[in-house]
Image 1: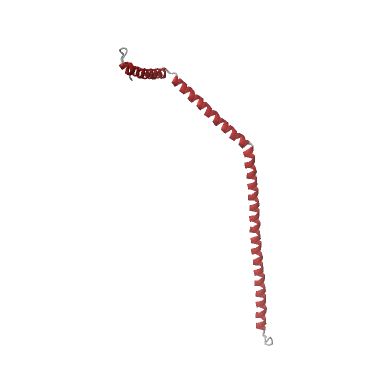
Image 2: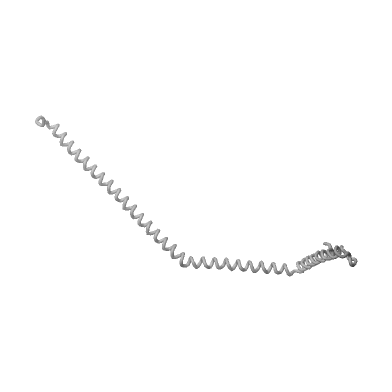
Length: 146
């Protein structure tokens, strides 16, 4: 089988072997480069993940410190200020209501209402007495009925 080799076959065989060796080395180098690239990407992603976790931890620490430190103070002051404004508004509303209640027009209206209530009560009683015993004296009913 191998006894019939010519120079050309030998050269072709050697060149084919070299070509296969070079192709194998190239494939191995390509695989090594791809592995190195993938390893670099994994390292980059791991570093990015670590930095994101560190940033999240720092943000959590800041939130906790601000919630129980100056943030709590600011919230207390905001609530206190809102409460003061509400109390001042209630006091002012009470003052306005008091001013309206003691105004001359309000006093006149209250006196007129009291007079009408007295007239209604008196007319009812006079009517009951007249129904039981008859009219005792002339009464101007127009003044008593509202």
